Length: 442
Image (tube, rainbow, N blue to C red; front, side, top):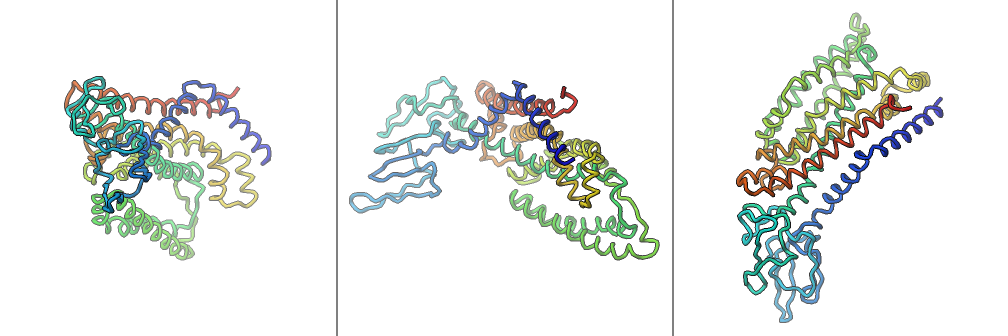
């Protein structure tokens, strides 16, 4: 039976990949997404005001890849020349050999000679090594123009890809963990498969309020301060609160196990896992999610980590709902019953056997969720909240275009990047939905 199940699973996966490959828009979208991921990964090499390599006074250096902030170079007369990497005017320095990045500018860095919204094809100026103002050499032109302060748009687009893809991936990783956990428990156990004693049930139910008080309510000021400090601090304090919550519930569960041996309290009761998870999903659906995200982002200190956590904690419901529906279907299949007959624990059956075969519908929701997360981040950046002001994102670039409507390049190019990325994820999601649907198999 296990061999038959493995062969069937392999054949369907092979069929699903073949179907996805035949979906040309989705298949091409994978290559586009891979290109965007490569751009995001190589952003410091593709767009950087520091040279990738210089040969200066007999020594070789790699400023763009260096973790140092200062170079101390000995001159022929014995003196030492100090070069501070973050403020050095690299383009006015003379080197024996130099290799520049394809885009020799960093995001958010000002080029004063080309400030004031210079169009892509407009006249640009350059300060030579001898201090003269000359027309911009082709090697250093701002290909897609500049913003109000002279910041290079192309550099912003390249580094903005890293921000957008990172936020989309990590936020949906958080949502996926929550959604798969709650959805699988709701679908597998339902309302009448997870049993315990009456005493243990009521002790744990009342313990939830006790655990919430000690883990979150009594630490609310600590959590608020951490939220205003940084995303890393907030994540650390949140993990501490979750750990306290789990520890208190576990201790009370052991206490409830002892109490459940008493008369009347030893009666078996069912835990309505499905009902609790379904009602929680309905509560989240009834709330205006984007307004909630804006409110939390406005209160919290601007941080990329905060944005990822907020989006992740509010985006898990679709994954949980699809996972629940799939687990309701597969929990009574033959291989699950065979695993039970072999004496496997319910947790092992759910995680090792049911989850790998029930995760396919969630993959579709995850693909659409990443696209939604990128849109949310872009919207928050456009509104000027959520991310630090010194972080360049696609949304912040569009926001800069509001200051001068004639600077069309600040709206067209970042908007096109957002549109392409979101469309790519949506096409991949649709391709996965069609390929993983068993009803489409002929």
